[in-house]
Amino acid sequence: MSENQYDPASEDAVQPLVSHLVELRDRILRSLLVVLVIFLPLFYFANDLYAYLSAPLTELLPEGTSMIATDVTSPFFAPFKLTLVLAIFGAIPFILHQAWSFISPGLYQHEKKVAIPLLVSSIALFYSGVAFAYFVVFPLIFGFFTSTGPENVAVMTDISSYLNFVLKLFFAFGIVFEIPIATLLLLWSGVTTVESLREKRAYVIVGCFVIGMLLTPPDVISQTLLALPMWLLFEAGIIMGQIFSPKGADEESA
Image (cartoon, rainbow, N blue to C red; front, side, top):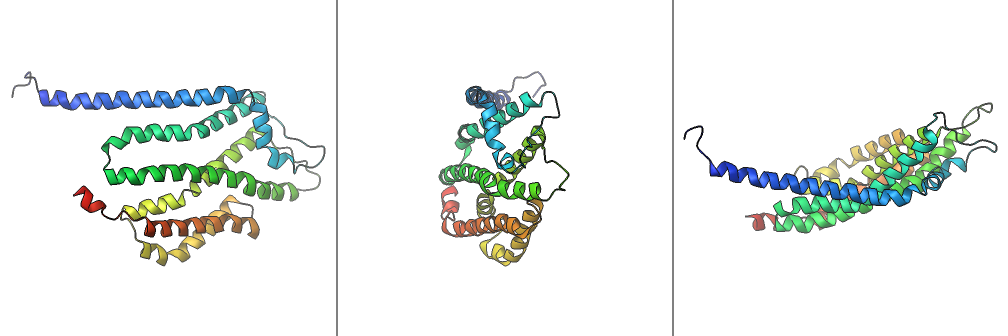
């Protein structure tokens, strides 16, 4: 075939790729639009949202002290950043729905049946991790830090530093609470087995306490409060892997 000869097969291969890229662009734009729609009304309450977020710390501050802003732009950008993150958090179900709609045409039927419950469960677990961090971990951490400082040092945390700290913990605990989903995926993909995970249970428990030590203050109570849920989530993933093993998937794909 000469170099200048038209190749219809090549043209047919390019068209689906272009259509997929256009679809991906449209779904990304829709997701950004939803984030913007959620962000705009929330921004009106940005200062109230920040006050609610900082409550676990401000309620424990000594009398006569408060949070401070060391940067000129912090009073505006800290609530702005918080509102934007909350808008993204709120749009996660829609964003995942768009991602699912994009990839679902290429999945087998048994994969679709499994993926939808996994998506719903992963969203619920992520939100549960964030709630656990706010209502359980934050009071312990800030109660420890505000009570161990020298008597002649006033605890006056910068609002931007506080926001960065709690957002890191939100993401950390949200990801940690995805342990059951990660365990299921490892089992279903054949990377490991239930028997192998059970044999490594002792190492997993030690790892949970190590992570708890890194993410919480150096006291046994708070480390245990984080390590125990992580271990229980790991055990839940093993149990779910036994119960919901995708039987017959090989036959269907064959």
